[in-house]
Image (cartoon, rainbow, N blue to C red; front, side, top):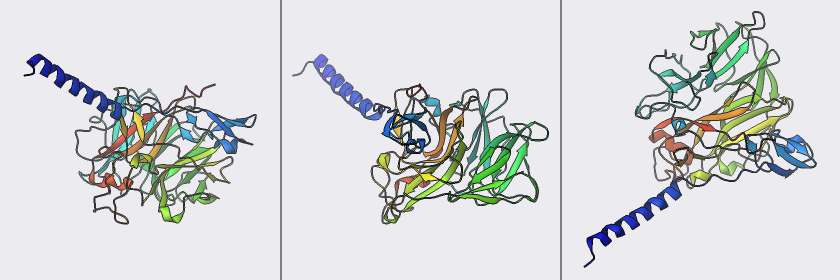
Length: 384
């Protein structure tokens, strides 16, 4: 007969061992950050995210890797796992975060019916003291979608008055406000080309790309009757072969402190349904002048995030990327739309949203609870 005390100790030892194993699997160590080192002849070999110094890339944080093509993640506050209320069964699917003049952060997040990611019912306006949350949602007005989704946002100075203008881009229309709280008024007789806009304001003019990321368009003024012109074509040379069923969407465009142009996208393959933590998730286009574009062979963001509560999560898909820069122009965070439920295991055996006999990694979201997450980027490891 085994004494009760020994039996209790045995149960404790086994249970503690299982707990340690679970924690080891759940909170895997963060990968080591490499701050360049790849061979180069110019900064183009460093993805325009670093300098070519003595024939080797030296990355600007938070960019990392031999060719400075990957964003390095820091440990993210656990409040950033889902920026909306997880207890609400409705889905959100990411939107822009804007810094207000009073130092608060404003997230404009489309919300959908339970079990749906098609056609949001409204755009929620959340406010937080910290960019990683928690966000307060109840007291702020929601915005009508006017038939659109995938909102974009830029803040710029009115050339005539010098006043700050807040602009929301959604559903083919641009809506302007003189306050981060709105109201946002559509510009009459004015549309932008395509859907899912990614606008920037640069040297007194407006530029944008859209869902397919095939062109950059330009216009001098956001005013009734104004028409966009094609500024540049975007090369997709170097993309995976057609057999991979590779696609890019959800662009976010910016111009960095060195004057280089960049676009990051959600990217995906319709034939990948296993080991979703290593599936295609993102793409990066870059240009020194906004005219001649290059597609990086390195994905800019990845699936697994470490949190300050000791946990980690491998997201099966991360979509609609938005970047956040501090008041000094330093890139500090990326916020994304994510499947909150399924991870590396995927959902290949589901049939409702299957391709080629399996449901690919990026389609698990349609049957799961979807939300909005933010990731803190590592701006210290590669700092000079």
